[in-house]
Image (spheres, rainbow over the protein chains, first blue to last red):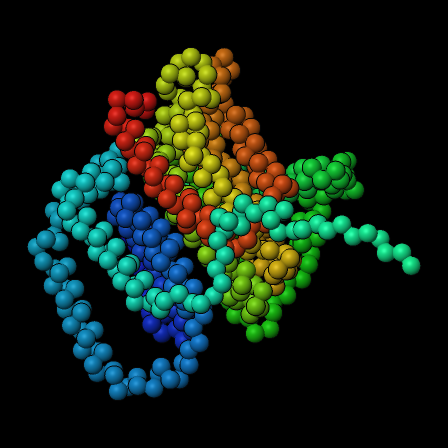
Length: 198
Length: 349
């Protein structure tokens, strides 16, 4: 077993363990932390495939941004774990069937002819920056799918705002612009008070 | 150098590249830790002088041994784990804070040849690694089982996520004009142009053509570091010490080390991206590592100066600055730089 294979199995073992803990951990914060570990090790695996841009993008986007917001929400949840576990056995058959279907689908996709790349094309010659290659592809061959994905994300963002926006609260809102330009003489009036003598 | 290589090869054989890398890591981390220790001394002295005080002056001549004494004191103190805390996360959080602060140094070049890993996507690597730093803060706040710590962690996380975007956009303008993600190439790119040919290199560095982005980067960097005037995460007058209020001894020291190592990191990044790294400001002086250190010291001095000068920002104003001022400014400036680059006035050919 050469060094690369050893690293691959090491990272894979961590990844499988972390993924299992994501669904078995009782505390949602621990689950989120293990999901973070899973993303991080996936980044490592992708680095071994010489896909350094994808690996780093995975960490920047998922670990650096998405999981932070996830943790934000999860930390403030007040979850009763017994309530969640109530229907476990009742829903297990349905869940298992769904899981099997997903595994089958993934197998079909990964086994299809589009995923079979000849080994000669896999080896990237030295000096090729795959950040540059991906960038060039995104603005030439895939420019419309790329723009479309951006529009879909924007729609999702606006939808989230619209769905959760419940109108302004009737609270006092101060405008920082006017606050900054306030002068002392607008707020404070100095009065001359003659000293009172008995 | 060759003699050293051959000697190492003779002793360690095939493991020599790994050993050599470890030696280089020690050569970066050990001075960094020493730098952190003396940055705290520098900070106390500078702020002391700015406030017409003397600063530390008891331990050693001019108080020079003070940081060592502080470190020793922290080493000897007991680490108290609060009751009801999540113990594993409580212990892991300081490690998650310091590890990215050190790992980021792997790709920082000190001169055009003196770099641990001269990788192609070094700027992306820095973005990825530094974005991990926020976990130390969030998790320590959550695991402490304390309201103050939790409030501090939430404030800090919101702040770091907001300012990371402005910072990222400032970096995007630098990438646009440099056309590369590699730090060595980014610095070399600043050595070209009209002013560099006239021997006035400091006018051809990125800070001048990208002045608004330089300022955005510097201010967002200060916010990202949770430094005054953006230190609402610690906010002594409101939430005692924020996320690390329950930490004592060496666990606290790790947060402290991480904060100061990050300060030095942002100073190094500012000098590489905007201030020409190891390039000499004028033509008749040679380039060299001392320029890099001089620029880093200048940026660090700026951070200390900010702290001694500005009062703490209010939380809503901080969010407003990040989202309503910097973000539109960044969008606008990315478009301007793009238009500038395709116009005949392009100076970055």
